[in-house]
Length: 198
Image (cartoon, rainbow, N blue to C red; front, side):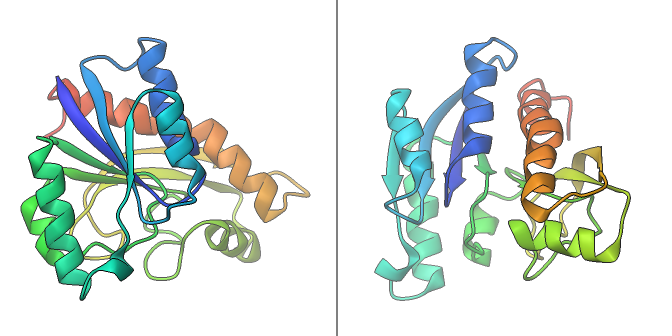
């Protein structure tokens, strides 16, 4: 059984996609052990609670510095025997000390086709605003391993989504979530659980 921790900052729609995939037996051999948020009012914690999953808020500002936060978070996850850390809309840059502890065991979902519209400052609606401003006809989502760069780790899976005439950032964001993010994140976790990805 692959034990995962899902790290979130907001509503937790990607967390819900993972929960639904497990409930529908489309994602097997995987258990969500923990949901961790950096915000105590994140709706993702309510989603976790509603499904009997332990949800906890661990805030960086409660620690002396980023490294102290990273060390505590790493030890907390290790105490729960977490095999894979899934960043699902987690708007905290993890310090190198954390990444070292979970090397090649952290994945992230990003709402674009990396290397487009990624890196520092590209998150949430900002990604879709940039895609529309550039006039691209195709966007999408990427699941990748997390390394010490920003959206620079090895790509695991991508799915393309067409940009439609009249799209707003909000409409495009929703389509990318529905057609790409909620599809490939559970698939990537399943492939890792099945040892199909090295």
